[in-house]
Image (cartoon, rainbow over all chains, first blue to last red):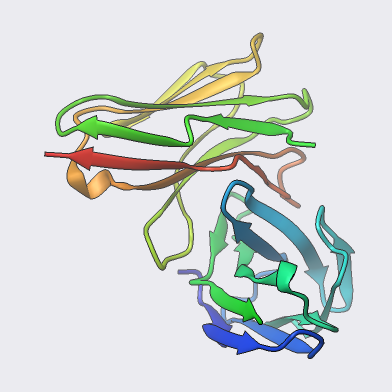
Length: 112
Length: 113
C-alpha cells in the first residue's frame, strides 16, 4: 500500500464550508498526487506535488488548493465546497524507483 | 478533452471466458501504458504495464496487447474468474519519473458462473 493513509475516509459537509483532506505517507515518496473519481470520468488529476512546497495543477484544479509543508503530508483543501465536488478522492504516490503509482484507499466526500 | 478512450463501459463474461478491454490514445508522447484494477471500496492497484518497445506483455492470465501505429492497447484476461470482477482502468503517461497518468473512464467487469 506504499504506506499511504487518507483521512477522513468519509465526510458529509454542507455547501459553502471549507474541507481539508489529508494524505499521509511513511515511505519518503517525493511525488504525491490528488485524484478524484467520478462515474463516467474515471480518475482525474487535481493537483500534484514533486517536493516540499513544490506543487502544480492537474486537469481539474479549479476550486481546490493543496499544500505540502512536510514530505509525508499532502493536504487537499476545498475552500468553499460545492455539490459538484461530491466525489471519491484518492491520494497517490510515485514509487521511489519511479516505476509505479500507488493509490490510497480513498476519501468519500458528500457535499449537501 | 478525453485523451484516453476506454471501452466498453461494462462487460459481462462467463467464467472461463476471455475478457477484453480496449483503450485508444491520442498523444504520441505517451510511452507508458499501465492497467489498474479496482475493487469496490478500495483504491486502484497496478495490474500490469507496458512500454511501446514491445507489442505484448503477459503476466499470468493477464496480457496487454499494444499497437503503436493504431495508438491502441488492450487488456486480455484469459480464463476469467469471479474474483476478477472489478473495475479496470487503462492509463497512459510520458516522461516517466515525474509521472502524471491520464486515465480512461473505466470498465466494470462482471464474471458470471
